[in-house]
Image 1 (cartoon, rainbow, N blue to C red):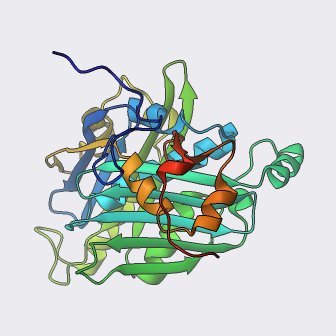
Image 2 (image 1 turned 180 degrees about the horizontal axis):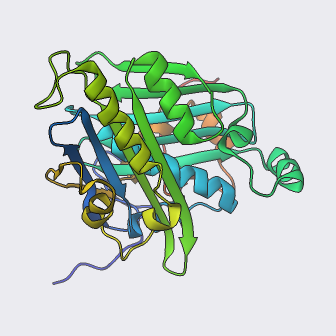
Length: 329
């Protein structure tokens, strides 16, 4: 007998500790979302990320202005590119927090490629900014604040975090600043996000200079390595946003256009997926940490509603089903 289909956003008769229902969000995987590459005999490596329909699935759930969604889309592609360069178990996150209309930008990606993101917006400040500038830069949207990357490998491992002030007009420039000042690593970053008839699309190309005191292959002197890096920089400088977002231009072909004369070698592609990890069980656990008095204040018409900031799914809990802590706030 086939069990009845239930809506996991509605109250469940199953106790919270047994209820692990996922919300009705897309079960979407992009098998070749990240394509790592390197240039043979040259001090250059990188990753090209094309989110494809995953970008629309992630961004389409947020009721935000297009300029905010474009910034969030760039952050999603960038985080995927950076996370998949690491060998780790856990999650890698990008966070930008400032005093601009976008008060918080938060994206994370797990070691398996599960991606999610959210943006918090001050609606009045955004409206005022757009009145004078309909296409504001990332710097205008974020304002003054900090830019952080965090690698969290769980409670048993030390968490690594790098934080720098927000510097640069674009998210790509902010990333370059971070790596130059915090990691002493030369990078080139190109980001693009836009909406077409097919929906939202987002792409990131992150290229790094490989440190090599003894040279690489035939490129042995410091001058030859500098020349090889500058050539690679010049080539990705020709890249247009339209090319990056074109569904008809797969990652392999796009990289071939750029680097076919520079010894391009591609590595095994990595998958990306819709990665919100919320559930009724997780949120029920959060509620049970509040006092009875707090829960009473949260309740409206006998129920408590909680909305996941990443996937925008609303969960409803009947007040009498949530135990909470004893005592009062």
